[in-house]
Image 1 (cartoon, rainbow, N blue to C red):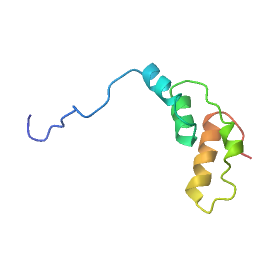
Image 2: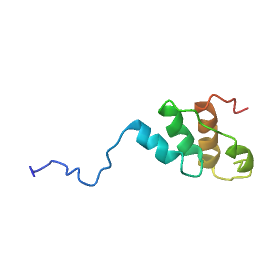
Image 3: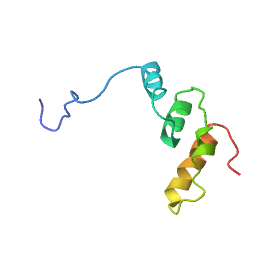
Image 4: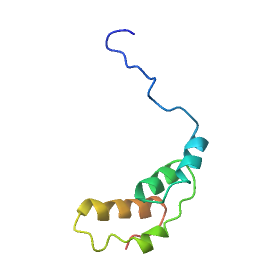
Length: 77
């Protein structure tokens, strides 16, 4: 290994399709929604109705739901 280089042995390799398949096996959340939309896949945002951020005191919790809704093409208002 050359000084200053990065060993890539710990990085995962695969296709976008592999990543989408993996993400679809996980419990939906805002981050997964944004990743699916970024990959060009459809994202289901119905989980937001069952897990709203409305009662959260954390601005970042509310923001991530808004970002997921906008990414999926929904109106966050």
